[in-house]
Amino acid sequence: MHGQEAQCPRGDLPYAELSRDEYAETAARDFVPFRVSAGITLLEGPCPRCRGAMSVHLVEDIVRGGGPTTATAEPYHTLRCGCRSAHAGRPDGRTGCGAYWNIVVARAEPS
Amino acid sequence: MTGPVLRPGPPATPGDLHRAQHREELLNGAELERIRSAAVAWRNGLGGLMAGLIGFGLVKGRSDITQLAPAPGIAVGVLLALAAVTGGVAAWWVLRAAHGMPRVLSADRLPGRVADEHGRATAAARDLRRGSALVVAHAVVLITAVGVTWYGPARAKPRVEVVTPDVTACGVVRLVENGTMTVRTGSADLRIRLEEVIGLGAVDSCPAR
Image 1 (cartoon, helix red, strand yellow):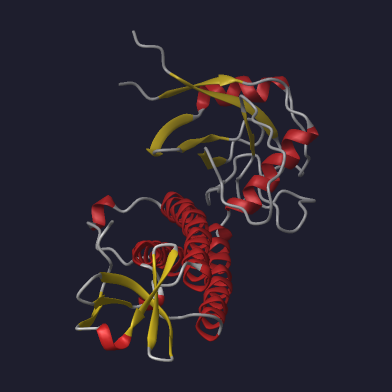
Image 2: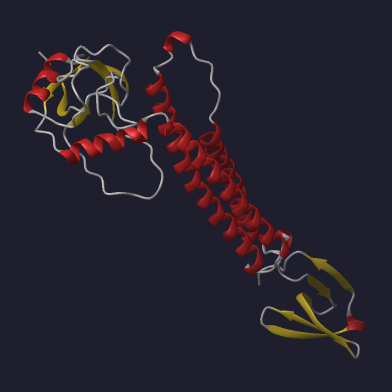
């Protein structure tokens, strides 16, 4: 997942790892999905909390080393704010304002 | 054909956040580098293993398949051909996983960085898995070929055909002493006086009786 360099309208909000029900509803309405290639979907839209522009790549599988692990296949994706604005109190190595939410990417029903 | 649609998911928990952060760390930038490093390590390890295996096979036991009976000799030939194919394909896959294969792409078809690296990383992971499995298969085939060469039945001993005015005998010479020759024909030994022999020659096989 990658955030995108952009001006954040609510850069004054302090960093806080929190989630609210309306974040998922807002993101489902505001984000636009693009199918990049087989197994990769790009979501673009504003963070539901700070409204900073962000983009996220959703991948179906991922390469990791080591032995097998217990996989949990959730029917949803967890997104977190990826804006690059300097929200106060953000730990090193993190991006965004700390907001996170769950979203379901579904295939559109044929009309 | 319509694209994907988005719906609100269930309430997110801190566990969801930790999983997302972990996924982010795995995906961000290092995915391709990680699989390439793993493939190089596998390439070196498997190369050393095969070198040791081949070295061991060369210094122990019978090493000439012409000393084998015809059927095991053919089997060893087939196994060695199979070993060459599996070893070659395995080397191709492992090397491609470790170093990639340069390609010329139309610039306007180049995917974004994340999609590009992720695609190459997953392809390299597939190559590495297939390649390492084939290296194991290659080792098994090679060990089998060496085993058959060492322990397979030897080629039959040379046979002679001995002709006297009374009899024609074909078999393996067991003993020559005191003017007689003992020839094993089938399961019986036949004693022939040498002074009666009017013909003697080596043959590949004896006619069926």
